[in-house]
Length: 560
Image 1 (cartoon, rainbow, N blue to C red):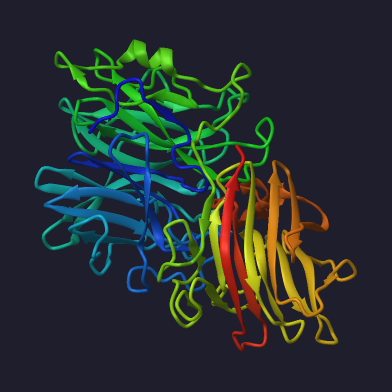
Image 2: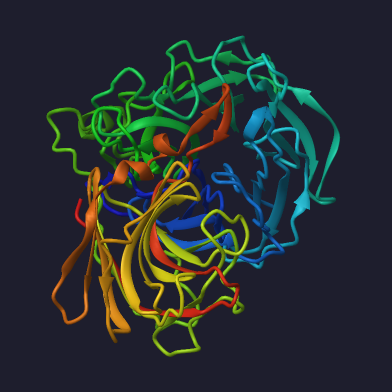
């Protein structure tokens, strides 16, 4: 049943790291697919009936058969998935980026299909690796794969434009040579192509201006699928590039969906920086905007700006949907100085007592699926057992179970039972961005084999360990660990008898931001920052023996 017209969509609808949204409606059901990079399971899926309330479905690519992230670089892996529906099947196109540094991008693209959104997903079919941000467009019996063409050559800007290749749905393969999409020339990088057909036109949505504060969604149209296309003379469909005081920034990479009542919405990514265009610890998130069509056939977001609140779909009245252009303008709240800056989400405490036989959809695992060789929810009832994995710099075999940070202020807590035998055994909770940027409150053993609680950190690859400030634990094996995130400040704490005690100094939370993670060397990309921050449970065993730690009652408490 549709929600009443007075319902409000509060952005971001998917807080925390949920970038590059691909939106789809099948009957009365809406689905969103978002990027997951080096985290398993790949491609996070969400479901809604009203565009207001979204239910996590977990990840589609949940086995090595579907996705192998072994050796995946930071912010590599799954970029910009695309979800479509044809012939009674969901079609999921995704990349698995293994290299992007030094001017090269190795980005093999795959397609898998399923009769239901929860699978089973077919064996992936390789498509090509000519470029990334691949998407499928179904035009009646015909289908086409669109993508950016990556240009590795120095001085060529990294992009050779967009192309389309015919895809045979029955044979599940590409057919013929790619055809270049003809667009008017422009200086900015063009990526994220999504094509739709409406009222006799082919409309091409692209992500322009990079993934930072100049990001935008632009629209072009043509009478033929590959062009020549003309750009909307009005300018960007949505962007915050000229409005640095908006709460929602980096608006871009969009896809369109039509409701059953004939209303249109744009799904796009945003970011909520710390301060005026400051660092984005939460990463890039998913937002929605209502779209109307002009008399001359161009789509419009009422203000052209990302907004904290927008009208939800309304029922059709007299053949026309409630909440048209005027209503959309009235209800849009962009979040400038006159707005309090709240994200508008209705988050509540989320506690996992680990009573289920599998991890819940809120959890992700780093670079490998949650298989019994290193993780168990049944070895000890109502506990998550992690067998210690490899070091933080390893691109294979880590033992980290994390969840996205969804609020600029919040707290994460977990109970842990652990008996380290040496300084090479460590387990605890983490605030994590990537292999080069993280904080770790952990239990380990000192040189005499005594259990001690310590804080370690890594800032752009530089390690630090507070050995002098460690807390001896004596015979204590079970304790509660916590962290508090207050905007740019992170603090750790612990409790053994219900009384919380601080551990270590105040820490710089912006180390866990997209901006801080991005590094260049001699003008070339060294490391990208695409994932946003995670909090989670982490166990190391640098002896290779897999010493286990048991976790219980993990809680994320967002404050705003």
